[in-house]
Image (tube, rainbow over all chains, first blue to last red; front, side, top):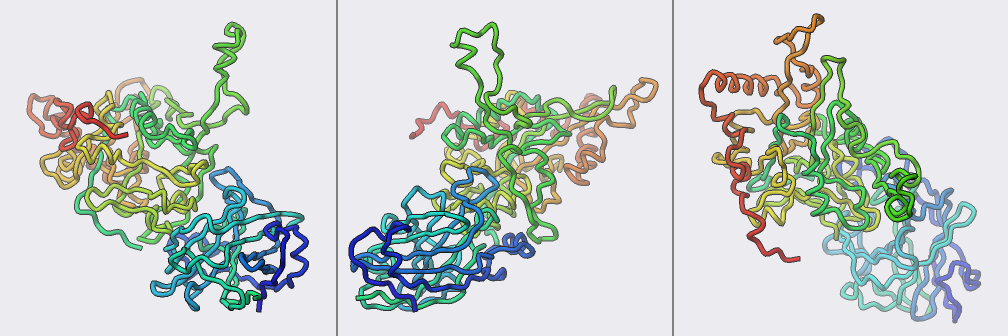
Amino acid sequence: MLIAKKTGGGDPLNPEAPEWAQAAPQRVTFAPTPIGLQPTPYIQKQWAVKPYGRAGHAEVRALTDGRSIFIRLDWPDATEDRDPKRIDAFADGAAVVFPVNGDAPLTTMGAPDAPVNAWHWRADLPEGTGRNVLAQGIGTSQESNASAVKTASLWKAGRWAVVFSRPLHVGGAEGGGAELAPGAETKVAFAVWNGSNGERAGIKAWSQSWLSLRVEG
Amino acid sequence: MSVTKPKRQVAMVMDLNKCIGCQTCTIACKRLWTREEGMEYMWWNTVNTQPGGGTPRDWEKMGGGFKEGEAQSGRLPTREDFGDAWEFNYQEVFYGGKGDSVHLKVVGEEPKWGPNWDEDQGAGEYPNSYYFYLPRICNHCTHPACLEACPRKAIYKRKDDGIVLIDDQRCRGYRFCMEACPYKKIYFNEAKKVAQKCIFCFPRIEQGVTTACSRQCPGRVRFVGYLDDPAGPIHKLVKQWKVAIPLHPEFGTEPNVFYVPPIAPPAFDANGNIDETKPRIPMEYLRSLFGPAVDEALATLKGEMAKTRAGGKSDLMDVLIAYKWTDMFKPFDRDPATIVWKT
């Protein structure tokens, strides 16, 4: 169980904030997403023999100040691919995913009657921003409530530290995301992309199944 | 994912016997569609000398498309492969008072390739050297590899005219489409982080106006119309006479841009005499571009030319000569100057 530790003050969006010492890290094991689940025959063919999703694991921590949640991922990546500005190069990325209504299939990025809410960070997005999307199946994600998710990132000595923050209360699916609350428990999953390996879209490392997250009251 | 067959398909035929490589089409397109930031290096329309490296360089060897219906791996071209948008020292030469001492040149690193780098080089040994021009746009394929590669369904083929478009609201810049397109006619906009390509001038087509590249062509190279319209030139050239054929049919995407292959002059023999039995452009080379159908297309063209030379009449030659320019675009023959365009 990942616990979003209650903290007061400070600026937990900053990966170097001292508050992060209060949050116990949880090790999340990553695996490559299954090739058979890639949504197009082209991607399946192109990546069938090419290794991807080799990040191995991430350390995940969470904090809350009672109004917002802060989720932090630390994972190994030998290269900092921020904004390659090349046609043939890609930026690193990370995502946090929640079921919108209690449960949803993670493997398929939600289903028509069970949406998931993903918070995306990509190293080439404007500084501080994130992408908030709702998905009801692979390849269906739609951006919504774009300003709700904030991010901060830091690459140092072969490791990324990325913090996502969002208000706990957004009004559920209509407000563009999964509703969180002090004292409540939800499911959560994670993914990271290694840009220098050409990873993007479904080609990524992921946590394979839902983990539990409790927000301290 | 599969593509729903459109109700109708607009198509283009380019007669390579008329192309003079003037790049008017290229500039017409550039001025109309690719002038924004991030589009500097884009040429949705290119004209290259064949045989040659093309744009992007050696695109024919980059993979993609289909083999026996199965999607093939492809590679992403680099900006250097496309040929970058060079900056020149205009300021220094024209306004810096050094007009007598400094030559106009590219600022920064000396370029090693460009979108028309090997112009007029061609191949063969004198006096049998040869080349011809090959204009290219997006082929708006019937079986678009780009559309089928996209994990976000950001590419679609329009129901009413079969034009293939990228929805830049759905595009996330993943560039699988660029890898999968065997013609390498999709560009990446680094400013907007989306893929972009030829849109077959759909806002013009919707108003009954043909594409800018075809209307501006001084050589009357390009025909535009519906593939299924028996009254239009496209149907006559592609379906009836079968003299217009797709480029690299083996890529498996079924292009809707077709080419009338170049008729070569005869070769010279070792004594410098004209050898009517040998074309100066090797048939093997033409087959490598247009597949085996090129033999029959050229035979038909030569047969009809002979007919007119003997004083006879040929419907095919009449279509290709295009006596009345606007007949080349029917039903898209409306004069764009008669339209008040919303900007």
